[in-house]
Amino acid sequence: MTTDTDLKRAVRAATTGDLDLAELGDAVSRRAADAGLLDLAYAEIDSPLGPLLAVSTPAGLVHLGYPNRPRDAQLELLAERISPRIVEAPGRLDAVRRELDEYFAGRRRDFGLALDWQLTAGFVRAVLERTAAIPFGETRTYGEVAAAAGSPRAFRAAGRALGANPIPIVVPCHRVLRSGGALGGYGGGLDVKRELLTLEGVLD
Amino acid sequence: MNAPRATAPFQSLIEAHAGAVAAFLRGMLPTDDVDDVLQETLVAALRAYPGFDGASPRAWLLTIARRKAIDEHRARSRRPEALAEPDAIAASPAPEGPDAALWERVAALPPKQRAAVVLRFALDLRYREVGEALDCSEAAARRNVHEAVRALRATDPTTDIEEESA
Image (cartoon, rainbow over all chains, first blue to last red; front, side, top):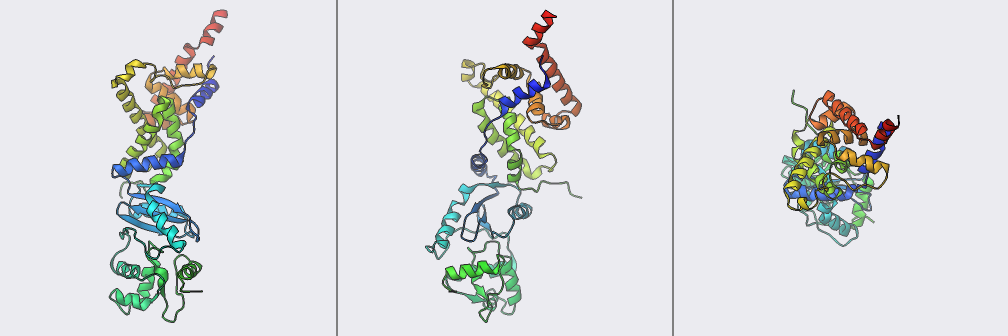
């Protein structure tokens, strides 16, 4: 007599198997990218600061999340602001991983990555684009960055713009300090700002 | 008010439901086809995702998987090598023993009954969700499972023996 228990056991035995989610994600993201469906690809990248959440669009790196931000909350915000078509696809972030590794190892002073600025606009974007041009190992004040962005008196707004930087480290908002040399603020926490400035030889 | 829209990152659906979709496809297709159809299912879901209302993501993915499995059956039956291996579609390779024998009879059920049995017994879906995945009502889903179980009991060789000896 075939009982439900027999049936369940037989069906389970025939449908159980191994599933490698990382492998599946890679295969799906490859096919999705070919079909133009991979709006956002992400990977967690190990760094001396902790794991960084790197997210790219077909245009370039759009978001780099500090270790102190919860991963899911960051992805949900990106789903809302850009697209819910988000897949974990470490292979799509290889160049970002390589350049960050080199930067943290002291072997890279400039990033050559394509950037997607779509999460920024107006004055925020102007401030961040000026900030991206500050060379490795140098610093500017909030007032100087505001002036470079066209509004010399808007140093507070410049501070807020830097706080909203979606691509920190690569867009080096850590190189912007108060006019007296005090650190000012930092979205990733002042310890991170201090660590990055030490890496670049600005601080001992 | 706007129609509800999916806003969860698609990756969260993969992490939560790819295992269930894989199990369903193992129940519907030869082992060699499962990986490919699973990937096709997820790419098709990714394509449709911005228009998805966000309700019952598992049933939604299973619906897409079932359609992809049907496409695969059709494609396979059109390919000439299918003639050389006529049993390749019906039977997933299974180990020997009573479970394997029973599974062979499940695999020989009409496709919709087979799907209903897999959804119900491999994934423990409620009939409402079985219906969603099969594009039919909850009542029709229940009927499909019951008819399948009745058919399996009717063809159970051990039942025949018991009935003869009774």
